[in-house]
Image (cartoon, rainbow, N blue to C red):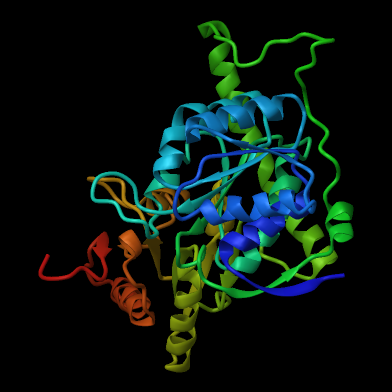
Length: 391
């Protein structure tokens, strides 16, 4: 029977993992994800989840263990954040190329010198070219639901790629919300048992992740690129099936809000979407035809879906919570690539770095820039919002 609980985003992730029955869970703790693994450890200790929990000596080791476990044909989970994800970097390139559908939950926080423990996306955006599917959650319900969807997508024979689910540090990971927790039988019915594409078996020896000569390496990268493209229809299909089974739909690769007659629109990602949605409603009440596009997946990137959603707008803004130094935000770069040749004015809007507050007024300010852009006025290609002092 379904239950309703008050859960943080971290706890929601843990409940989702428990319901998906992974068999091996290696981990190394790091704020702000540690509560996920603590909750899962409680599930294992209390007999609610039958899994091997392996305390690793680093995040690099945790991912290495996940790779080894997944290669033997068992469902695998791990989680990390920021510096931990960076320490995994070397090993992150292994699962996509050898087709291991590991689920990794990354709780976003800032990275490097001068870093804090609050949200920005420089940690996960830096790994967007590693070959992992990558999705960003808006609220705790979406976190739990996307854990379940992630395994269904990643393990689909048409995909078989690892999945990175990202959630905002503290803003989501530590905030308590109402979450509907599905029944175990419902999840078992929705999520088939893992059937590996290949598996390591002493009775049938094989090698994986071996050194490859130039005669084969380029074709391997090409196949991985095509495999990521194959995930697009599967993501939409799984979202439809999830809606039928559980009554909640997320839109697949993107979700749109009040875009039917929008003249200007903003693309957002993560928890910022909830605040931006309020700004859209308030501006609509003032007679302004504004709309919102929630970017759910960074990989595979929804080029076609974005082109379709914005075909009638006069100006488009892109919200970024990370920065490619000496360039633009990574989401903006992808969107501009999607709309190359469209003639639609596109501007980048960087805000919320290091957990800086994002207010309704912040997004109204972004829409103000879009109004000017739509009317033909010259505006900055990239605007930083919420800076302190004169910049």
